[in-house]
Length: 246
Image (cartoon, one colour):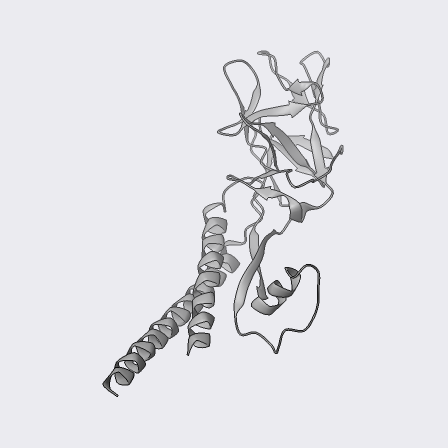
């Protein structure tokens, strides 16, 4: 009886998390450079084996309990679209912009930048865009970005090199809001020099049709597990009341 309760409960929890991830993907379908996320699932037995000091001793038959192992981001190049806005930038190839926030540095593919009152390039709500020499400050008269990521003034004087980094393992990046990541957990960053286009943005990597279909599938699975959990609970209550009559 209890095994059925645990199986249904694990399905509710796992599908709730998967539904939250799908909802977040759908909400970010218009976020420049956003990469869709997926929930990687495993069984309770496999998860338990991993946590037993590296021992791989058998612990019984197959498990009917599913658990969420981790979230995974699908890192793919999105389509580049013209915006005609000077502050918009897009990376063609591998790499992430570096943004200096109030308490940490962020990494992102979102190049929808603006300029603050001090003349620094910023990703709104996150922080200042970083170059090799620190936060990038642009002149009032305008600027242009070369394909190599170097920012020039109107007289072709070199102002700054945009800092673009690649992590040694994308799966180890920490997730934050608005398509940003953090290089915690010992992630090693390497500077790269891909093509950077001014006046363009990278579209979100979310396929809305596929995501809506996936969200409906997960919601149906969630409802099924919820109904099963209710039935098991009712059976437990009935068993307890019948035993009490004996």
